[in-house]
Figure 1 (cartoon, rainbow, N blue to C red):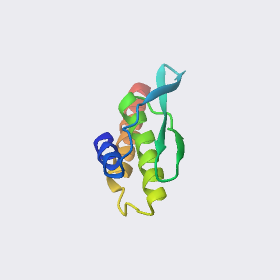
Figure 2: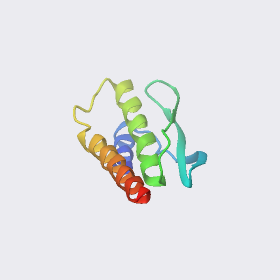
Figure 3: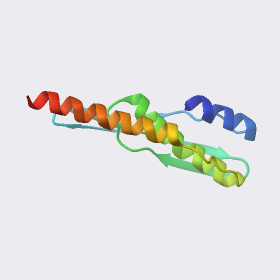
Length: 107
């Protein structure tokens, strides 16, 4: 999804964002992190700041902040993505994997 954001930024003439780790926490031995990002959007003449949700790996945490940035970038242009099924399915796969992992640890 980071490729989609880079492509979208290039289409609108914006700089590609950088992903900054924001917070990390440890819950029952699982490490969770989330990313922060801001980017200047020329169309509105100001910075847009997004803070992603906590995830148990860097890639999922980056994808969350990327989805937020894409949404904000497209909303400033008046455009929409009609289908975010891939993102939704990916989040469900991660939740299923976590549940199976927790279940196997309970045995």
